[in-house]
Amino acid sequence: MPNSVSAKKRLRQSKDRRLRNRSVKSALRGQIRKVRTAIQAGDVATSETEYVLAVKLLDQAAAKKVIHDNQAARLKSRLSAAIKKLKTAK
Image (cartoon, rainbow, N blue to C red):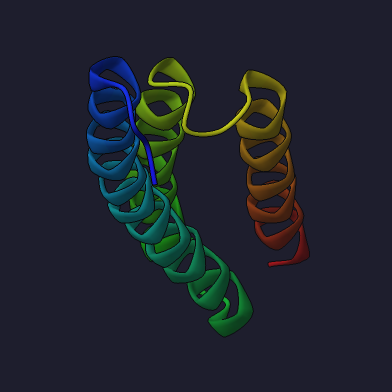
């Protein structure tokens, strides 16, 4: 347990940030899951609309430093490549 005033404040801040980061990551994982399920189903239109939302969430999470910038870029690239592959297969 923290003893000093500043350590107690840091604990409060880290708890708040942890909860906020968890909710951001959870929403992000859910949106990426929606894109991947649409790709698996072969639905190009749905996968593209869900991808746009996923990109927005990825950029916001990277801006807030919840995830690393390169991780956001890597996920966007992989999802985009999967959608392009789906388009060429049809």
